[in-house]
Image 1 (cartoon, protein in one colour):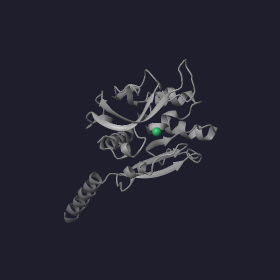
Image 2 (cartoon, protein in one colour):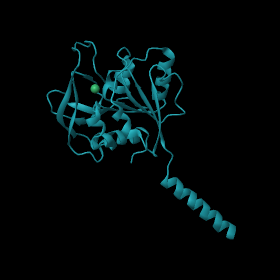
Image 3 (tube, rainbow, N blue to C red):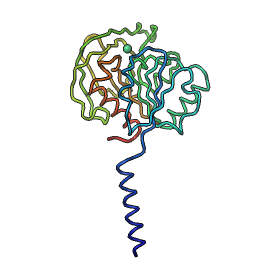
Image 4 (cartoon, helix red, strand yellow):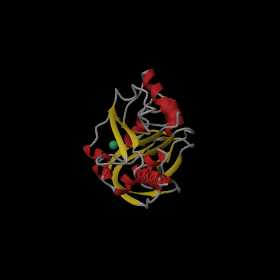
Amino acid sequence: MGHLIRLTLALLAAAAALAADPKPIRVLVGTGGHTHNASFYTWLSQRKDLEIEVDGHPSLFRRDFRKTTDVLVLYDLADVVEETRRENLRAFVESGGGVVLLHHSIADNQQWAWWSEEVVGGKYLLEPERGLPKSVFQHDVEFTVRPVAEHPVTRGIEPFRILDECYKGMWISPKAKVLLETEDPHNDRPIAWIGPHTNARVVYIQLGHGTEAHTHPAWRKLVDNAIYWAARREQ
Ligand SMILES: [Zn+2]
């Protein structure tokens, strides 16, 4: 009997430890192709809930990362052109991985329609296409952002002001589920959305150019919410 009680207590303690300390979310941060302030990394440091790996182009996607990554966070601006690297990225997405796209990563893969149309649901146009002119940007605009949908990514987010870079004239898919909007004339109205892919969990958050965004509590909360949702671990 004593053994049984001890075993039960041990099991209870193990269960409590599991509940208190779930396995960290394995995050692969992809960078390269665009300069960025070191403040981008401040939200990643000292995290016990995330196990973070940073990789940059051109080594990013050289290996099959399905078994080592729960969420891919992209803060890059590059085209993946080699077939092996495309296959690895495609395999991760098709297998239901999480993808959180930040800021200038909306201009990734200009020549890969599958990426912008089926995964991201949007594209910053570096060249005119689809009868649309090139997209434009404007730095250092202070504007108001409002959540427009009930979603785990916008949970706890109230309307907020932020000093950040505006993008205008992006192609945005009618299949994108818009989460945040702004009425500022320097920007397109949608400023964050859920991508259309049906297996993967994909979020795009336009905000995040510089230190003002990287240290903004609403930006940090949005990115955290997006990572947890993409990892299927809604808080
Ligand atoms: Zn920028």
